[in-house]
Length: 416
Image 1: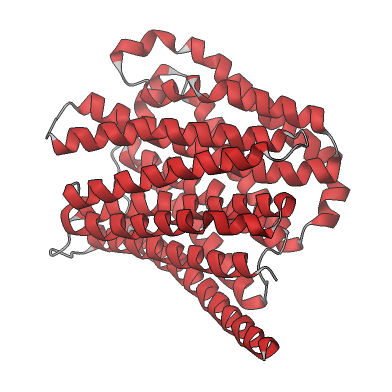
Image 2 (image 1 turned 60 degrees about the vertical axis):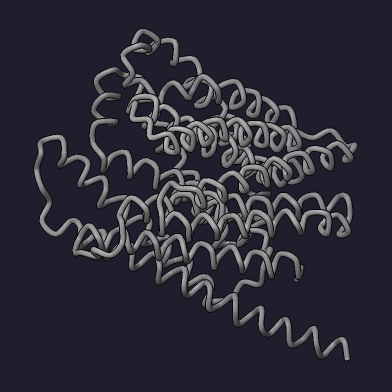
């Protein structure tokens, strides 16, 4: 088993447990009370660490491993300092946001984190160019890096507004959605698609269709940002123009699904049973996301969706947990990038169950909000979902530590 992946993916799962623990605190504060902790500070810590400490860190690890398969294991050492830089700055953000919210230390760590990503983007781009073979995978990865860099514009603008106590609500929300869009519809999505495309090209050989899917998604990414800010009166006249990027995304997804369906038997032979289920769940979540995004073109639906907090929270969690996190775990399990055992699978099952319960509860809360109807004990039930999520991750973590300890002992014995 690859020692690089074993160590660093174990750290990623540890980071995911911190994300879940912060989410649990947020839910507890809503249901009950923790007066000595500021809700907004915990929320900033939770969201920033989820993006950088869990998803970005793990995507970096998997992308570096992709390079090592072509350019040799020696390439990994070139990235160690970047992984540590991202990790340290992520921990710095997690702690400093809890203590002070947006302030000197949290903004400094956030800035350091962004520049660490810039360095990763430069390094990875250079190394991708060393791979002579033409591949759509390289295009997915390059686009992901570009969109990741673009997303930082929103982050810098937010930091500037917070530091200068600017209170323009529309500008603030537009910056938030700018960062979010180019993170999860840009960096996260395109990096994940790059990892998936690498496997699909090898298994199916359908390079032309996979390239067409990339073209459609890439074309749609930038204009699709305006779907996030349709509540701004200044752009209400572009609703129907946005049908084009929405249609492009749907067409791109249809092409990918068709490739997978046409080569179903070959793909099934190359991935594990549990990995297949996880990837299918991630695909289902992504399909739901695209359907909701399509519905947001309608003016009334757009205003309704952005007017109710449970709907926004449910959508963000659908993307970050249902699509991205399940995909990452599914990808790791599908191709057995770490040692898989029953305890790890049990943890993943509980974690996924927690995601499904959480999304269903948020859906119920969101629908009820339309008629301003309160759901009895909804906050306590959401707290229960958060406990299930954390429990699943802790079981995964125990599994990883046991395996890592065993691998470490075997390594010592073999070196004697």
